[in-house]
Length: 159
Image (cartoon, rainbow, N blue to C red; front, side, top):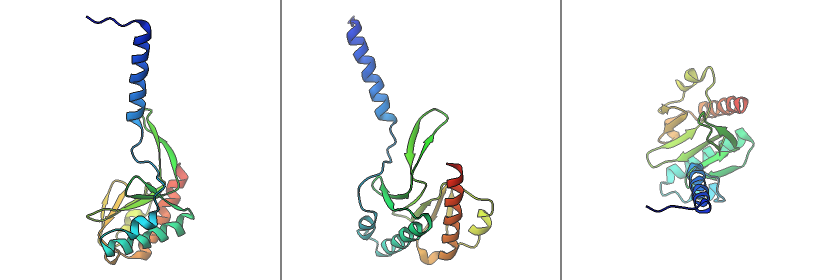
């Protein structure tokens, strides 16, 4: 059987710790890619145009510059979160992504009358902290803007 000296054992333990830190790192990181350029390069012209409208809408609501997070998410602002496990990371306050099947809005926080507002939105799917819809023509953009503004305010209160 192989026996390690104290130095080798310490080095091995340090490497294990470093591997754990690297593996625990949040995969969704802010990048330097241009959100507008990313959206202009989408193959689906309708999705590109709709996403640019959302980009501008969220910039108006948040008064923040849009940033790319990972290869396909666009976010506004950022905050540090900590899970019950102690793992922490940084993520945007509110954002969206033009996914293949639909546009996904990551709203982050609900507000008391949100369900009533969603009834006026149009054709959408709601899961967890995400709102999905195929195109802007399927929804009422004024209602969407109101919902996003209220969600942003609600999220800012809890971070």
